[in-house]
Length: 448
Image (cartoon, rainbow, N blue to C red; front, top):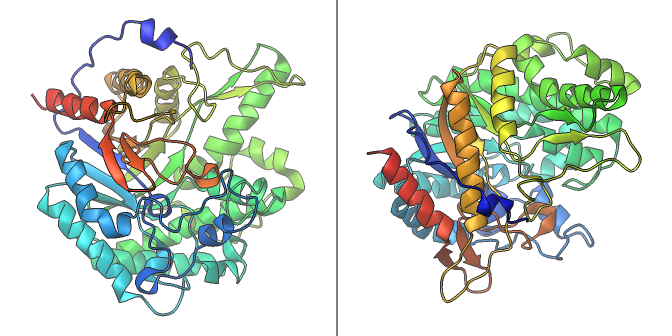
């Protein structure tokens, strides 16, 4: 990362609305551990992370941050940071080991205890039903290529809503279905490890269909939780003004952002993406779009970077004037403003939460502390960009910093640290990073 971001003066953050929600986020497989505890069944990530050669550092999620046993301490850390809300995912195979059939009461009891702990500290729960960890039992039946998985997902969603829908603030169906489809089925980078473009596009459709069916099932439960979905999104900028670069950027936006937004908000797929997919376009049932296009109460937006589109070989790379994160992602806060304004102009949107934003940084303990000024600068710049969008009329109601804890970062294993709390994976010792202390002060200042 360059030092430009450290040299540039950063103006103080403007006040966000008094009702604005400040939170942190995690996901089940990345932090829970307890891989086979109390009747939990295996997920596709349990299987994938134990397959040789899939995880860069050769690790797995068997223990991760041991949150399954340390959740009360972790909620205590959240309370010390004065956050309003905690976004987390449930492990489907913990509450329904095979993804169908019998429920696991011990699994539900874990999440009930977690909700009790959050409630005791005045922290609102924002639940995600699916953060990429499909029960292996369903994968054995075809996974997301099998339309029946959509029906099983809706049943799971309905059961969670019935049990917890009056105890949580929001329930999101999916986290980043783009990743489930494109990284899980498109290039084999993520579980279940398939590399087939046609399968990836069909899976993307089934994920959207399962979202719509789940929304209907949760509505039928008649609970108070707000219902929605979380999508990872970005602007797509041409590297140059060439016709080839501009066409590539237009297609990138259509196949990534509009591919998931249009079915939900317009009841169709974008024509450009459908045309370019050609024979790989998905098989669509007669009533699928009416099932997908269910009204939702909120939209979760995860933003990390922009797409920089170059048709040259090799492709041009962004200059990275503000540097790059430890994932190699360009730091581009302006893209958050541009994305939100573009979405606001294109769609009739419900309220928005920024459900993930943060950076991987090569953090190290130094004399009992973890200096991570780069992360502080990153978050401040993105909050300034967010404030700009809010000032221009985008209805954003909250911000969830990714992530509370250093954790299992998917195929990167434990080599990448996104947390504002440092985790020593050998001892499970938690240490607040400088960014956590800064975030606490930010929240306190915003409440004055």
